[in-house]
Structures are given as C-alpha cells and as structure tokens.
Image (cartoon, rainbow, N blue to C red):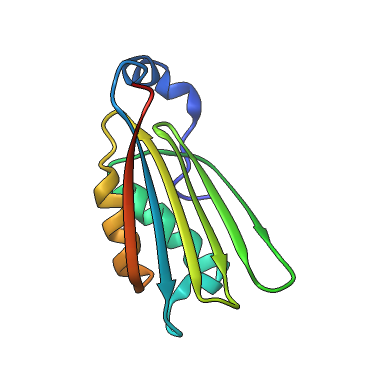
Length: 130
C-alpha cells in the first residue's frame, strides 16, 4: 500500500522519541453529508495524506467496516498511532492521534479537519508520560 514504510528503518528515531514529549490529540466532530468519512478508500487516503502533512511515517494500516457502515481505521506510525472511528447513523467522527517525537500533530489534525470537511470540531490535547 502506498505510504507505508518499513519499521526497521526507524530504530534510531524511536530511541530519540522515547525521551520526547508525548501528546494525545482527541478529536470529536460531526461530518456533513458530503464528507468522505463513510468511504473507506477516501478515508484511508485522507489519513495517509494527513500523516504526510505532519511529516509522520506510516508503518501499517488496519481497518474494520461494520454492518451499519461504521468504520474503524488505524494507522500504526513510527511516531505512535492514528485512529479514526465513525458513526454514520449519528454523523459522528472520533479521531485519536497519539504522537511522540517530530511529527506535527496539529498539522495532521488540521489536514483531517479540512479534507474530511468536519464540523463542530472539538480538539483536546493531553500530555502523556510526564
């Protein structure tokens, strides 16, 4: 899959990140009718692009599509992980980005907000591991 890198190339990066700040970005939002969050391929492409926008590195991607059309998408990053959960019957989206090191978490979130056309966005930042 395009955008996925081998984990073996990030040993030194992970060592450096072990001592860096760790932040959880917890995002709750609504999606409009024209939002691509209900299309797995478009949602995955948006997530991969968002990680690139934040200078992150995707190591693996996994997803589940539920019978009601809800999607759980998880990107394993060299810098931790990004998960996106959708509830189509409620037009809700929850995004969690756990970041450490040099990834620009705010750039990732800003990109997702714009490309997914999210509304009523609430972002909470939680410092972790301190």
